[in-house]
Length: 358
Image (cartoon, one colour):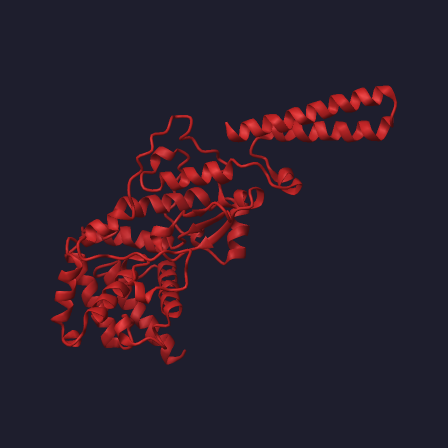
């Protein structure tokens, strides 16, 4: 194992213990693997480990990692602090006495990205990632309020009928039938963001890290920086869209190189939108715009078992139409038979369209 790999693992171990846990000796393997992957991607994505200078916030040495851990601890104890308060605290540390505002701000942002897994950056440190907008924590908002702003509770009032989700509502089914595509995101606030034009859904797959936040909070008795309700709902949404027992989901995620669905906590799927406060709007948008849209091709129509009665009626009518064409040629009785079959087929299509948009 190379020295660089050792350094990354040591930094991850230190960060995991201080960000997610307090005084925990053993780490969950799935959690460790997930967070190390996130940490490596953060370093690689921004080139912190190689090309960017230290004032962009990256840990270039063990001392830098210790600085990040120190700030993590302070932020966890000062959730109502404002950014100027944080800059003042950092500037009093030995390694930052001569640091300018840019250095201090980027150190704050990098630490918060590692703590919150949110894309918090200054404009000058933005990446070429248009699908993930940057979040800027300004000087006039407390850290607690800044986080809450990005996970608002839904104000939508939905009827009892609208709040019930179809059991077929899984990402695997929408990929097969509705031409949905998945984009894996490292930014929690970007979870369930739907690009309607390209039919791309962003998914935050770090389920073990979310569970670690909750477990660490329970063991320490402290509320995590990210509200517990957001963490719990995000896990619930992953269990809803990627049921661990579903064979189609297993095949899809295996192709995507994801294993988060194999790790708990597991619970019955939340098929009622009223069980979601923070992610209700996003789930309803996916349900209405993607899941309830009609199949886009004959192949997808063949796979579409969301309404079994409609499926059987459509294909039986189509079969009757084809058999009528083949068996009777162009005599008068065949014209009547073809007309009747075509009418049945058109009725099925119209009924299907009404059912999809009801």
